[in-house]
Image (cartoon, rainbow, N blue to C red; front, side, top):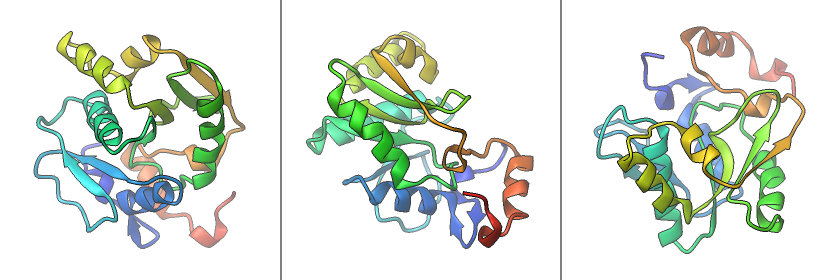
Length: 182
């Protein structure tokens, strides 16, 4: 996108603040993985710093899963910060199957789009991610295809909207939150 999405502002809050608030409603502790030197607002979350820039979300996911495992968690909700409408209900929808389906390592929503960065992941996957990175992998798809993954089909919904381009961000800022569709 050419800009730090975490600090883009929508409806008076940065995208990272909105994401942390939605996640904190269901998860504790909350970890935010940030690039080296990335400026962030004060957050009610523990900020972890990536060692390298530009490696992609796989490294950050591994870092967050390892921190969650060290905090005693077996499951963690992993998401990107570019989802301004994320709701705690999305986490609830995914957490049930993650807890009750034997052997499942990842539970992802599917609303007509692949959503690798809005799912429940077993924290034990941190070691697999390290191996993938050491083998030169950088994409989340590499992890998804090498894991027992369950996709939960959901209707298309605003909560899973992410911002990937300047045009998508501009379209957010022209919508009044009072007029948003649910």
